[in-house]
Image (cartoon, rainbow, N blue to C red):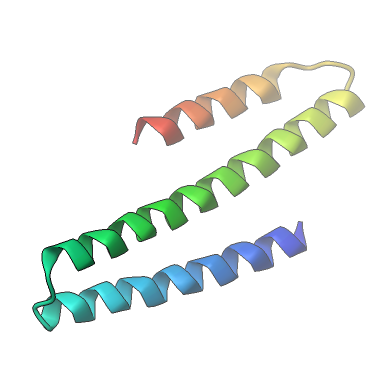
Length: 88
């Protein structure tokens, strides 16, 4: 879990740098197409973070179910969170 946490922090710091880059592009009056390409890259990077978090949450749910003899409440919670994630 610690490795995943470190990976997410690294990704978030990269995103922070990308946001600063987009801000600078806007301040400099760069072309819209260049800015939009960077915004698309940002959106992809944020989505990847969400996927990593969801993937690890599902793995935790499955492990918990295996240990607790098939309590499906954790899986229901996962799908509720997943639904909220994909809705936005």
